[in-house]
Amino acid sequence: MARLLLRKISTMEPIASSSAIDFPQEFVKFLNEAHSPYHTVHVMKRQLLENGFKELQESKTWARSLHADGKYFVTRNNSSIIAFSVGGKFSPGNPIAIIGGHTDSPTLRVKPISKRTNEKYSQVGVECYGGGIWHSWFDSDLSVAGRVFVKTADGGSEAKLVDLKRPLLKIPTLAIHLDREVNQKFEFNKETQLLPVSGMADLDLSDKKKAVDDEPFSSLKSIVQRHNEDFLDLIAQKLDLKSVSEIEDFELILYDFAASTLGGVRDEFVFSGRLDNLTSCFTGLHGLLLSSDESLAAETGIRLLACFDHEEVGSSSAQGADSNFLPNIIERLSSAVSYTTTDDKLKGKNFLLETYAKSFFLSSDVAHAVHPNYAGKHESQHKPVIGAGPVIKINANQRYMTNSPGLVLLKKVADSANVPLQLFVAANNSPCGSTIGPILASKTGIRTLDIGNPILSMHSIRETGGSADLKYQIDLFKEFLKQYSVLSEKINV
Ligand SMILES: [Zn+2]
Image (spheres, rainbow, N blue to C red):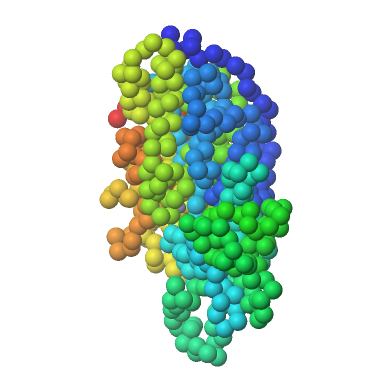
């Protein structure tokens, strides 16, 4: 019954096979555009649209938009995104194969009132976002990207992406002559000493001073009063605005101006910021695109990718993994048909619960590769290395969600995709990270496994990942999305 109501349409577009794409080079391009979560979602949206996915809005009904054999995506706050392809034989209540990651990374964000002048230097007040290795930000050339709200001609406001793409800021270290102990101990005050310099302050500001006294009443200080004017001028120029007064507000973050690149004697490494966790956004996106081929016509489930903002600060926000974003989308997908019929709501609820019970979530986030100079930090038998495939993360205390049915399932998927896997467990005397896996598993009851590619220097401004691991993870995700609805029925818990 339900199947009849899902009108079948052909949305198949030609997608290059995975062997035709140079993933390391593609990833470097992706990293060099994705300088903020807004930019990451923007790049992902563009690639989804190019591959025949259609945009849906949470604020509108999906009753007439969703079709079997169709491909869609929806964003929240333009910093989180969920994309999915609906099987040609999908019925409500059927399973969803889910891959999840996060769009945010530790960074420094421009404060609401950022204007600073010290010793004739102009400086920009910044707030620490997430648990960064902040000492790695010293002496890097820093640029700024994010989203800016500008006034429109009709009196409204609209958001625009901005990326200044210039080495504008610097957090200078102190010369060694002034701190002979620095190589033994580098300590700094995050409020007063992690403060970037943006230029030399104008000695005579009289001709540039704004006639703020004549301005009409405003509930907040104007943008010009709150931020360095030279800095605002650069944003206005970049967005082709007539004046800085058209800027209403913004969310801007700093990033390393040095471009992401392949490195190592055989280009076996990726050197970049934000590998945590754009690695999963990139591999998840390509896994979804490659799985959305002619096999979708016979698919009985849904193949889905969810990338959330705010993981680095605990995921509790309107668009974080702890929000209702994914549960709402799954509810709409599992009950879309009942909304178009006279079925009562209860019936829709049953579809939702069936879908939760049948679905599976691969929570993808980067893993700690063993460090050659600090190998003792790893558990002796669990030392993942770069280039040897994705790492399954296991933790008895449920910081990671992997359990044996999930392991059995993923091994079958990896065997058929020819992808090597590695295992990670933290040493008992070492702290352990966590992911969006436990958050979504406890919220929805969906079976979950934690996995991710190994990297070094997690949360540094410049991390080191592996080139070969990209294709491994993409092949694994593609196979999981394609095989899950069939495999799920063969693994009895
Ligand atoms: Zn992460």
